[in-house]
Length: 271
Image (tube, rainbow, N blue to C red; front, side, top):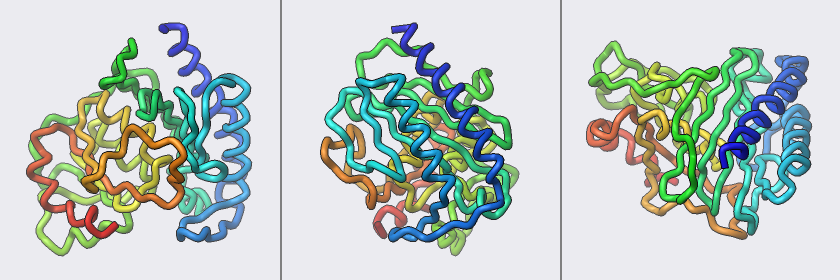
């Protein structure tokens, strides 16, 4: 199994670097159009989606693929990749160099490996989290091949908590930390895994925003909470995940759930 994980990591590193280099050439130069769900898409999203999907099929022909821009129905496959070709399309089109490529690998419907590459920041996050899968996995989280861990501090006004654009209603009440808005769902939560932020929340993310990050955050020692009471994993075969939002809270350690959950849990009730 060790050779398999080496192959998975090398594939992600090589493929996202190739796709990322091509996307940099379009950075800030192309227009986006609005999809039915209100999110943006560009020709770069679609070409990146196609390139990533083709690379997965050629390298792992027995694996299924679910992507943001192509097939959003979860397949009947023991292994499945979930792809976000450009996380942060608004940043990408507006010339803000914080955007990424996200790849999550699921086993029997649950993520066990995640990889997120931010081309212009030259940052590669990845992690392994076996959970109850029964797989032999080298559990851990990494940034540019160096181990990362969540921040173990107690919240204060000198610590950061990340919001998304649709969660600003939280600020109507006093909040224990400084607020940041990144504009990229994956990076928002990965900053918790890396210890830069103590928590983060996303109000309307989709499965391609979270599949990779769910692994990395937990492998780094963080706690990932879905605000809807319904279980998310394992994903259901035949389910279309294109219009399903998955509001979530991420905190740097389990003990902080009781402090932050009451402040953000209303986001789950509104979806």
